[in-house]
Length: 299
Ligand SMILES: NC(=O)C1=CN([C@@H]2O[C@H](COP(=O)(O)OP(=O)(O)OC[C@H]3O[C@@H](n4cnc5c(N)ncnc54)[C@H](O)[C@@H]3O)[C@@H](O)[C@H]2O)C=CC1
Ligand SMILES: CC(=O)C(=O)O
Image 1: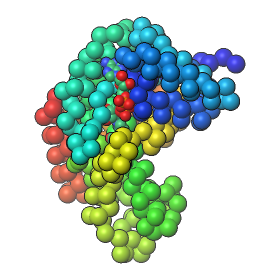
Image 2: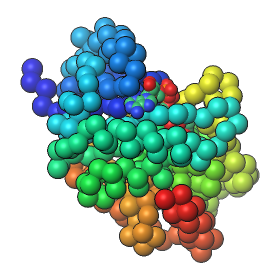
Image 3: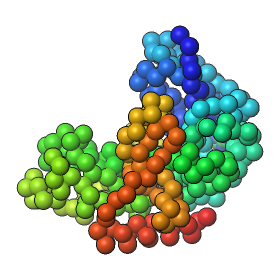
């Protein structure tokens, strides 16, 4: 079988990078997965472990050096520091900015058609920095953004109203951080506004928003880090790009209106992200503007 697409995962020795790789193997993507890490031994160990499963799949996995990355079709970046219990994602900016600088000094030249998926935190700020360092068009550099949080939201709502998460169209918006908010005004179920549905009558909206924004803190407190959830979401983005799936996901993408990267729905395909227009409420627009200002303040 010929493996036509190369997917590099930088930080592939770590928990999130390995979880993305393993999800691609389980999803039977016909890809060559290249794990890259400053800790070469760790990347080698992850590749060997994942390869023990990959022979049952269509994916291949191996550890490589930075020089091989530039030739990749998709570059996923999961490298860098992660939060300690109780620590906000924004605390990681200085450390992970340096990590990004070091990575881009080692992987150029990048294939002009490559798509970069940023995952390291704080992901919205780092996606913007990755775009500048890569020199690629803004549409080709995206971040996982609130895709994971939106999955958490759908799961939470599903448990509250007993409807399958895939039939609840609701997203967390703004930033993959403490200021994320639910886009209630554009949330729907069975083609009608979610908040008008009688199933939502006794649901506490503030409680939901808080619970979703806190979920990463809860997991980190309990087990030190989060990786399975984000791993599957990022692998889903990879699959969508490879298939030119043109699915709409809430991801970190460039907003011309706010002149910065924000977590908002976009069409995801082989050319990266195409923003979609949203008609938010006035209150939600203010929250979005505040997220944009937060992100820009860190650039
Ligand atoms: N966007 C999202 O939804 C999520 C983002 N994250 C973020 O993902 C990042 C990684 O988290 P984990 O995998 O749990 O951490 P980890 O500590 O398990 O892995 C990080 C890896 O990065 C490697 N690394 C450090 N500097 C590097 C460099 N200059 N070049 C290449 N590799 C380098 C380390 O050797 C390590 O293997 C963190 O920033 C975390 O906050 C985690 C979960 C969800
Ligand atoms: C760690 C992180 O960003 C998350 O699980 O949401």
